[in-house]
Amino acid sequence: MNGADEGARHGRGVAVVTGGGSGLGQAAALALLTDGWSVAVAGRRKEALEETVALAGADSDRMAAVPTDISRPEEVTALFAAVLERFGRVDLLFNNAGAVVPRVPVRDVTVDDWNRIMDTTVTGTFLCAREAFRVMCEQSPRGGRIINNGAPSAHAPRPNAVAYTTAKHAVLGLTKALSLDGRDLGIACGQIDVGNVEPSDGLPQPPARQADGSTAVERTIPVERFTEALLLMASMPPGSNVQYLTVLPTTMPFVGRG
Image (cartoon, rainbow, N blue to C red; front, top):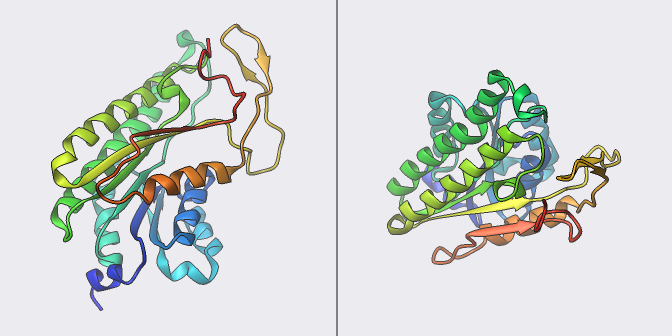
């Protein structure tokens, strides 16, 4: 059976999830799988990706682990080639992978930390989107959907987070550009901005610094509120799009954050 036939066997379509070895990426991959998608999970850590596949249980035959450093163009090209070989097409890209750097005052931000978050969150998101555009334009039927993982910080910053805030604002600009450039190609692009999610390790939420300099323990939402929102966006018919969706605890500082 060739790749196209294999891809056609699977319900809703074929999804690629970056950063699929842990956290929101893992939750997204498993939720999409349960919803009928075939899913390729990408990330730097092979063992973490294989853990995600193992969690799929009896549905693991519809999931593929593809170790990938999304900041490297050649590895992103290889990722999409592997997905095409396995599943035959790409219907959805969830650009989830990012990098974590210390929250420090602007004067203490290192160039290495700045580059780390830009290379993954901005350049990596662009490289995956570019490759998805190439694939989606050439496949039949043409088109697909890209969902970028933004953050409330794509709209309103937190203190001591200049690199993260800048990177997420860049993702927001990329989402807008992809949405515009994809209009005539059958490619929809939207962004999901997720607030505080309950830690997967079950530990208490640590206090967060507020704009006035104080700290406070903020409310969280179960990860299921995120996956429900993501599945809503992913399930839109080709002619419809959720452009921006923000899901967060009702009391989390966001509107009027400062």
